[in-house]
Image (cartoon, rainbow, N blue to C red; front, side, top):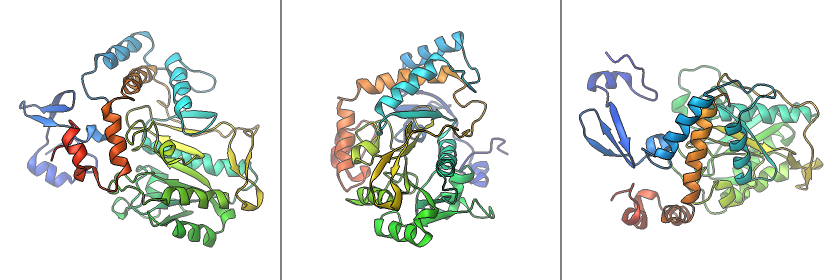
Length: 352
C-alpha cells in the first residue's frame, strides 16, 4: 500500500502499479531511481523555468539559509530579499505603481485576490459587490474560493455547497460575459477572474479580440479585471506577463510558478468612474487598509526569495535569447505547441 497520498491521482491505480520515484535532475531531464532518463517537457508542474542544477540558485539559497532562513513578516517586519524581490516584481508588473502581497502558492494567491476585491468594494461604500465571475474550463487553484470559481466540474464533485455569489460564463465569449454581468446587475459584481491563456483546462489560446473585448466589458460596467497569471507569467508567452502582451491593463494580477506566489495590485487603485460610463478615475488607498489573509510562511522565508531573485536574474539574461522568441512565435499562432513545426524543430523540450 502506498502511504503517500498523491495529489490529483487515482490512488487505487497508483497502489496497483506503484510510484514513479524520481531521484535527480539536470537541465531539462530527470532520472528515476533505476537511472532511466526522462525529458521534463512540463517543467515539473510548469514552474521550473530555467531548468535544474543551476549553481547560482543553489548558492543563493544556501547563503541565505546560513544568514536568515525564515522569520515572520507580519506588521512592519521584512527582510532584504523579500523587499528587493517585491521591488523588482513591481517594476515589471503589467500595471503602474504596483504593490505585491506574497503568499505560499498560486491557489492562495487567488484566495487572497477574491478577499481583496470584495474588501475593496466594501471600503468604497459598495458592500453589495460580492459576485465573482469566472470562465468555463478555467482553473484557479483548489482552495476555498478557487474551487468555487473553477470552470471544471471534476474538481467539485461530491463537495457539497461551495462559496456563494459566483457566476460562470463561456471561456471564449465576451458577449456572454456582458450579458451575465448585466443580468446579475453591475452594482453586484466585484470582479472577473480571467486566465489570459487557459492552462489546466486545455492550454487554450484566446480567440482573436476576446481578451480586449472582455476587458472593455469590465471597464464599461465598473467591474475589476483580475488576471490569473499563475500559468502565463514570467516569460511563458514571450513577455513577462500575458497581460502586457495583450495590453490588458488589469486591476490585479495573481502569479506563481517559478517565482514566489503572490498577488500584485495597484497602490492607488484605478477603477471605472461613477455611472459605469467607462471613464477611469484614480483613487488613493483607503485610510483603513484591509487586513489581507496570510499564513505562517507568507513572505516569512527570505531564503526562497533569494533563490527566486537568482532565478529571475537568469531569466532576465534570457530575454533576448531564442527561447523567448520561440514563445512569441507560438503565442502569435492559432495552433497548439504540439502542432507548431517551428517549436518542434528548434525547442529542446518539445519533440515531434
